[in-house]
Image (cartoon, rainbow, N blue to C red; front, top):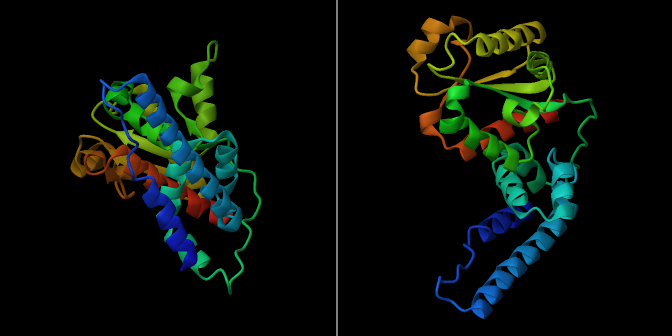
Length: 252
């Protein structure tokens, strides 16, 4: 159980809040507190480096963790370890590391994007921005029109290209989504892909609508398991996606 115990200990250490000096504290006190917080983060990241070299090089997030360690990306490392702590298959495998060799994941060319976020523009402020940030913290490669489209791009061509180059599609379905030309075009593209290759692709999120509304409007996806945005935080949704993505990587 050494792996799980060490992993949990590292995650628990991140739950200790940084000290925040009061607004009336002196400059010296503020500077000392900030330095102490920084030192604690550095010590933790050094321990994560040891843990990574000991256990995580073969994990699907291993390459990203190595990059974040190099660039000292504390928040991304915290999110990665939290995601791994939810990966029960990997934990069970690593708990038996003394007798079971961890297999290398098969190399395969992965799509350019891990996930495409299909949504109505009217939902950006209420949900999509926060969801994007939660996924981005985990190092997920995201096709998100606001961040992916660049000055001068032909947006229709770029979006259609994104639907073909994404491993998964998170479809945020709301009343704002209904009847919009491009949201329905994206949904159609992903349905065609999923039907052609028979592999899970569409991950629906119901945002302020009921399953009955979904069945009425889009019966073709009503039998796909969806989640309700009101029952999960965006960080929780990001972790749920990470589990799906890790399972996919293991299958390659």
